[in-house]
Length: 135
Image (cartoon, rainbow, N blue to C red; front, side, top):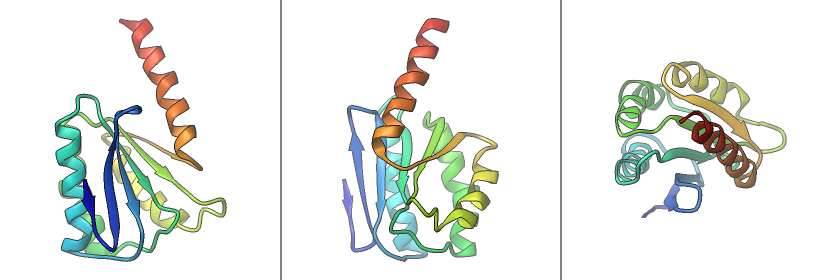
């Protein structure tokens, strides 16, 4: 678990996802430390995926976006993450920022936006059922 004034990171055992709740703008180490914790949690849980709650979001800093592409995405993929989910608000106020990140993240992950954790849980349940029948 990780808690700061900017972000909370926790593990959702039921859905096997790391849940990152952004609370306010941050950049540099304050932005990267929660993502490092997310990688640590994913590395300890097989087939663990990443959920970012962006409803209280903010615009990205170019250096942090580059770090997500160059460092976070590669390390998350190495530890087994295959899905990146964004929880968005009804107005999708971060549409441009998320589209920019999705382009790069989609090279390694399935990237989807939903309005709630319940929608993500249903999607993962469906994906896991499909994968189980393939085996």
